[in-house]
Image (cartoon, rainbow, N blue to C red; front, side):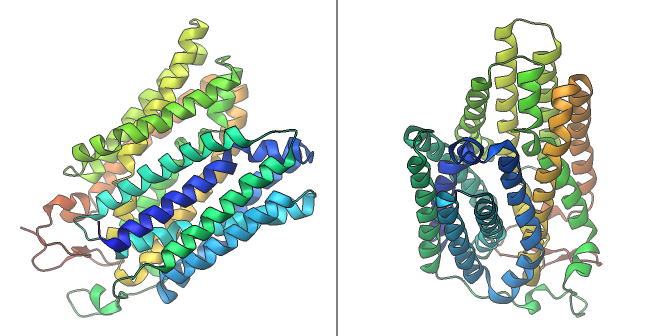
Length: 432
């Protein structure tokens, strides 16, 4: 990695480290430490998603017009303010408003960081850059959660205030580190002009007319709905209510998920980086379908408590394997589909799809996991198989280099430009 890319990765990892201090304990902090009740805690968690949905539609255009660096610095500063305010809030109104600022800031950071990775990488290195970011973020979240767990004390609100101040400091560090990055040239429209000389269209209408990107967004929604949207809601409710596992086991299961990602990321990367992205994503659907079947055994198999516990932990671990396979495929594919002048808008659109799935997933999965265990498992087995079907259909719309970047022989930031509303255009010298 170049110096700019290294600094971006370090800043991203440190911000994830800060998030790890507070994310596992937010519900307990609002409901019990500040004694605002479970209802307010639920509202605070919902506000995070709603704030993201409110700001992401405007984020992409700001990134493409102003560049990702100033947008990231502003977002990091806003997130730091929100974290500090949340750490000292003791009323419903101040807590909800602080959560909104924090949620908006962290939401904007995602596409800004992704766009910076795109600008500082080439088609040949982008897959590894995104895999490294995913690895470091999970490592940071895990370490932050472990360290935060040693500092918190429900009987001392000041211990939670300390966690939020540490989180705010990490956001400021991200902003400072990002400010030292010397970004490469600003993309221009001329780099994304089709071969027939016509001007490329820009904006939401152009993105919606890009069939490959629309299909990828649909696929992304199903991916996040069927996995991430169930971790702390439907799957947790199913495990404790139907499988009868101890709530503390969920922490072990999440630790197993993170451990698999950290241990397997670069082994998996070696296996997938020279294979078709669409096929890799299709395999993830099959792995997750098997994971849901294993979860079904935990709650519906009438086995021993030990077997049910082992099955639930294995389910989370299998999800981690799939996540490790997705990190070097999905995010780089979003970048490779985007015209240079719309990289920020494409990243923001995909982040918006992710937030929608994370908002809808718990609302659907939570009640089903607790009250309808059989239909819940069947539903998400089918959703996982849907990932496989959608991935294979998407593969037919991708250019050879978009689906398999290792075919590129000349390192170039844009090796194949698939313009919205037009046939894919191959840059000369990019293919053998």
